[in-house]
Amino acid sequence: MSRRDFLGLAALSVPVLAGVAACSSSKPSGGAGTGNASGGGGSTGTATYWFLSGQPQQGIREDSVKAFNAASSKGKISYTEFQNDAYKTKIKTAIGAGQAPTIIWGWGGGGLKSYVQANQVEDLTSWFDQNPDVKSRLFPSSFGAATISGKIYAMPSEAVQPIILYYNKKVLDKVGVQPPQSWGDILDMVPKINAKGIAPFSLGGQSRWTNMMWLEFLFDRIGGPEVFQAVFDGEKDAWSNPASIQGLTECQKLIKANGFIKGFQSITADSNADQALLYTGKAAMMLHGSWTYGNMKSSGGDFVTGGHLGWMNFPPVDGGKGDPSDTVGNPGQYLSISSKAPDAQKQLALDYFKNGVLADAEVKEWIKTGSVPIVKSASSQLSSAGDDTPFLKFIYDTSSQAKVFAQSWDQALSPTQAEVLLDNIAKLFALSISPQQYASNMNAVIGK
Image (cartoon, rainbow, N blue to C red):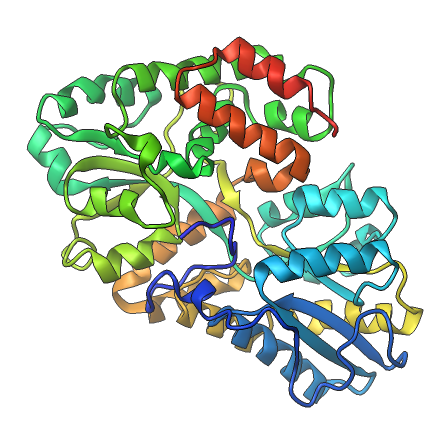
């Protein structure tokens, strides 16, 4: 499953494909009993909200709106649901035409930045200052992808999905090595694992964004979050930062040492083949999203239930400036308010943000699907997840304690930059361009 298709997917109790396979129609569907489902219009007593279809997330979003409407005396929220690709097209067109829904569901980062630059969404900074109880109940790291030039333009919502380092305990025991505690350990382990006829790391390199996860962590661990932040801010030649060049060089060092499964460039993440290599013991480790746990549990025999799967945060790089408690991935989903909406609709949306988003009932629903919602109070409820509790607590601790939870690069950047990014990452991993050529190619599209 590609997390680029649907970033809100993390189900432990159902196959990992459920979140997308359930999207049965590209046509929008209005919520039952919610009234007018069109964007930008309707009476001032009805705010509109567009979001993605696909179970189980769709049902949780619907229930959240229905619960708010049942308790609200100020007005109602009507919702419209779209498949992922249809939504991206529809919301872009609607916002450009000044016909956006009152509440805009999104991924934050580059998409949100484009809305801000076009003055299409409300600045929520002062509202959060006036409602500190709303902000304080959420993971502090979830606000990174909602913040543009120091101001908050979106309400963090839903669940977290950090990228983590998985390992096969049986394989590491067979080789006689421990989980790596540093980048140096990783490089030292590679020849030992290869000597046993096992690939050190599984990688679905054909998908490209899977390669990107390695660079995200190396940049962070070597130079700290400031390195990519400079790229996001559009600083000239930001990709040529010495820490960037070192990260690119270290990555190619791992590739040249045969750190990845042979033929990784023909393996896709969408087929879950990279996960199968880990749970069948053909690869020792895998850097991937928390959303892969569910599929490994359902498809990997006793790999998960038998206690053979291990997990950890990405280790530090010797001499690096980055905080090893930081993480990358999907720090949440994001709700913005259209600047074109009537004041009454804006106020109703803010009321929903305060009293409806991630209310206690919604938090329980996310946990039931095997997700970790971005509220601090979720910690006390994770024990209800049974055998999955240790994994969910790890995800909670990693996400809630991270000083910085960086958003995946291809979501943080504009679509133009993201495509050039993925293309050049593929070339970097194929060893067809040098770190300096990569930096030069990427510097050419900064700010576009």
